[in-house]
Image (cartoon, rainbow, N blue to C red; front, side, top):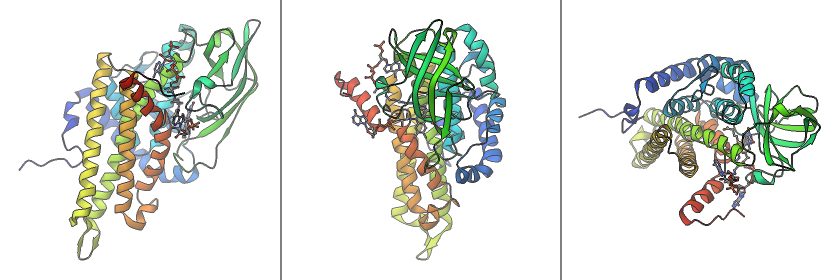
Length: 389
Ligand code: TGC
Ligand code: FAD
C-alpha cells in the first residue's frame, strides 16, 4: 500500500514548483537548526533578538514578493511556505517577516515615492534597518477609520500628534509607517524615522501571547517631518488596508506551520506514551482527534495554495484573503487546543511546543483583523449589506 505522509496527507507540496520547494527546504532547515533551540528562551524572556532580522534578511525573506531594491521577486506560494516554515517554529518569527515585508516594505514599495523606496527598501531588505507599521490606536483597533492621530500642515512640514498601540517593533524600528488623519486629505501614511524628536515608544511587558515578538506603544508629540515623508500616492484608508491584505496572506499560510507542529507533537507523544497498557495513539478517541487535525491542516493547506495561485494570477480579492485568514487561523487554534489535551499535564509546559503555539495563536486570531471583522467582510461580500457600523 502507498505510504502516505502524515504531515502532508494529500501531498500538496507536490504542487509547489522547484523554487518554492527550495526556499521551503532552506527556511525549514535554518529555522529548525538555528531558531528552534533558542525559541523557549526568547519566549520566556519576552523578546526576539534584533540580530535575527539580519539572518532573515541574509536569507532574502524580507519583502520577498517585491521586485527591485534588493527584494527577491518570489512567488506568493514561496512567500507562503516561508511564513509556514517560520511559524512552525514560532509565530513571532513569522510576525517579524510580516511586519517588515508585508506591512512596512510593502507600504513603501506600493505607495512611496522613488526617493522613499531608494532610501529605505534596500536596508529593510537586508534587515540592516527595521520597520514598523502604526495603524492601531488605543481607541481604534478594528475600526481604523476612527483614528485620532492627526497630521497638520505647518509650512512645508507636517506635524504629527497622537498615540499608537500594539505596534510590533515600535521600540526597535528605524522607520515607522504612521497612519494619521489630515484635515485636507483624510488618512495619509507618513514615513517617520524613529530618531525624530517627539517619537517615543515603550514595550508592552505583560503580554501572555506571542512573547517572542515585541509589541509596543508609540507616542507622537509634535513630530515634525518634511513633506517628502508623506506616502505620496492616494489618500484615504485604502492604502493602509491594502498592506493588510499582504500580511493577512502571510498569516493564512503561517498558521498552518503552527498547527503542523502541534499535530506532530501530539502524534509523536501519543505514539510513545502508554496508559491502560497501550499507546495513547491506539485509542479511538485519540485517533478521532488526530484525524480531525489532519483534516483541518489539509483544508487549510488547500485554501492557502489556491489563494497563492489566485494571487500569482493577479485576481485575488481582499474578501478571499479574509476567508483564508478567518478559516486557517480558526483551524490552527482548534488543532493546537486539541493537541494540548493529548499531551496531558506536560502539554502545559515549555517542554512541548504546543501551549506556546496555542497562546501565540490567540494573538494571531486577533491581529490583522479579528475573527469577527473577517466574518463581517465575508458577510458583506455574500449579502451586499455592510454590517460593521
Ligand atoms: P471601508 O469603507 O470598507 O473601506 C475604506 C476604503 O478602503 C478600501 N478597502 C480596501 N482596500 C484594500 N484592501 C482591503 N482589504 C480593503 N478594505 C477596504 C475600500 O474600498 C475603501 O476605499 P475608498 O477608495 O472607497 O475609500 O472601510 P471601513 O472603515 O468600513 O472598514 C472596513 C474594515 C472593518 C474591514 C477595516 O477597517 C478593517 O480591516 N479593520 C481591521 C483592522 C486591522 O486588521 N488592523 C490590523 C493592524 S496591523 C496588524 O495587526 C499587524 S499584526 C502583526 C503580525 O502579523 O503579527
Ligand atoms: P477591538 O477592535 O476593540 O475588538 C475587541 C472585540 O470586539 C473583538 O472580538 C472584535 O472582533 C469585536 N468587534 C469589534 N468590532 C466589532 C463589530 N463591528 N461587530 C462585532 N464585533 C466587533 N496593529 C498595528 O497597527 N500594527 C502592528 O504591528 C500590530 N501588531 C500587533 C501585534 C500583536 C501581538 C497584537 C495582539 C496586536 C497587534 N496590532 C497591531 C493590533 C491589532 O491589529 C488589533 O489588536 C486588532 O486589529 C483588533 O483591535 P483591538 O485589539 O483594538 O480590538
